[in-house]
Image 1 (spheres, one colour):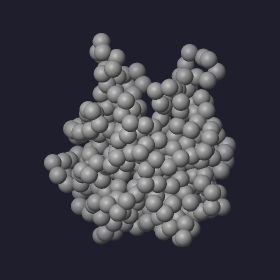
Image 2: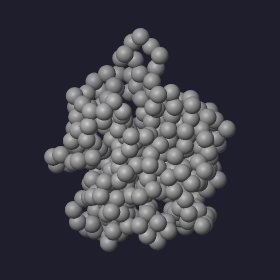
Image 3: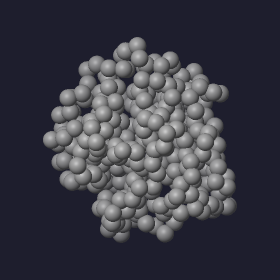
Length: 344
């Protein structure tokens, strides 16, 4: 049963190339993206005053199947973004465990990169940046999660030889996102394609790239989330854990949306909110807004407890998954969202 589900989910995700150019795709989003074109599964991070965005490779959605493994874009203010040149590659060489010749992408099938900034484990003054990513593993029809490090936010990132997370059997692990708890402990959250496509959490050592302990499930799909949930993103604010995730994920329709759940404890239980944070249609006219990642924005304020949050996600525009961005307000266990106007 698990093997059948794993293959079915991968088949659904792998059907992207055919649906991009086919009539099955839904209509375009009415709002304009901040990064047009192919920039799916985006994540953002602010370092100093500059914002950086990373995204899934575009090879599977282009006719010539060329381009970097991990796309990158920059912004001085989180509003106006550079247009990816198709040449700069933040992860030129994925881990040794990665299938370097995935048929649909003419190279490594790298998905959903997420970068976090950590103190350098060797005690140097410079920070160390860790990139978590998913990729197709050698000799299998499934994805696992890898990690790579760099002292430069733009890379190139040096990949660890072995996978960070690779579930037993035929299940896949995708959509990783790093998280640091209030005690400094590091984790990576991700989803698997088990029977309930659960969101899992794996503890990490201080280096951010070595697993520690056993992964634990923190959220599962229910009837309202079908066919699957994915793309977890976790943040702690005022002693409340906010777990954002995508639900009703299906490339063949426009129901993809971003929702969230909250908890007073890291491992839950998490309570899902009935209304999505970013819904399709509505005020912004977005089509399938999903794969959202939250990031903390630096503020010039005397109150160290005050924080602002930005969220990057993709939605369909002209048959492509383009990046949108908006402000997220967290208040006493509830979240609200406001779309940023396009930077172009």
